[in-house]
Image 1 (spheres, rainbow, N blue to C red):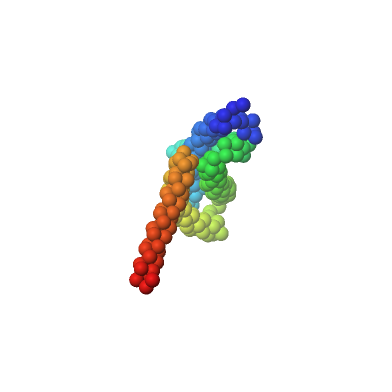
Image 2 (spheres, rainbow, N blue to C red):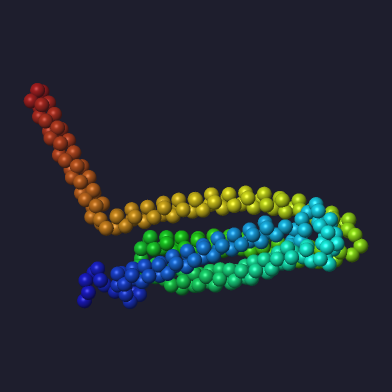
Length: 274
C-alpha cells in the first residue's frame, strides 16, 4: 500500500503525477496564447493598413476623384499616371494574401487552443483537485474569448472595406466614359463622411481596448495573489487548529479566574454577615 501522500486518485494517478501533467498542459497553452495574441495583433495592424491606407477603395481620393481620373485618361498614352495605380493594386493584392494567411493561422490556433482547454486542461484540473488550476483554465478560456472577439471585430471591418473597395473599383472603371455621374459623386461624399466617422469610432474603440487589456492584466495579478494565499494556507494545514487551541485555552483561563473571584466574594460576605 502506498502512503496517503502518494495514494492514487480515482483517476488512476497520484496527485504529483496529475500536477505534472497539468503543468505540461499549462506550458503548451501559454505558447498557444502568446502565438494567438501575436497573430491577432499582427492581423489588427494589417487591417489598419488595409482600411486606413486604402483611400477611396483603391482609387483616387474624395474631392478630386473625377479630376484625377480625367488626368489619368489624358496621360494614359504616355503611361506616366498608370504606374502608381498599378503599384497600389499590387500592394493591395499582397495585403489581401497576407490577411488570408493570418486569418487561417488564427482560426487554426483558436481551434487547437479550444481543444486543448476543453479536452485536456479541464479534465487535468479536475484530477489535481486544486482550485488555482481551475482558475487557470477559466483564465485561458477568457483569453481565448477576448482574442476571438477582437479577431471577429477586425475581420468584419476588413470584409466591409473589401466590399466597398470592390464597389468603388467598378465605379472608377465605369466612370471614364462621358463625364461625372452626380449620383456617384453624392455617394462618394457620403462614403467619405462615413469613413471619417468610422475612423473616429475606431480610435475610441482602440482606447477602450487598451483600458480593457490593462484591467485584464490587473485581474490576472489579483487572481495570482489569491492562488498564492490559497497555496500558503494549504501548506500550513495546522495553523487554523493552533489558533483554535489558543482561543479555547484563553476561554478556559477566563472561566477559572471568574470562579476564583466569585468564591472570594462569597467568602467575604459570609465572613462579614455570618
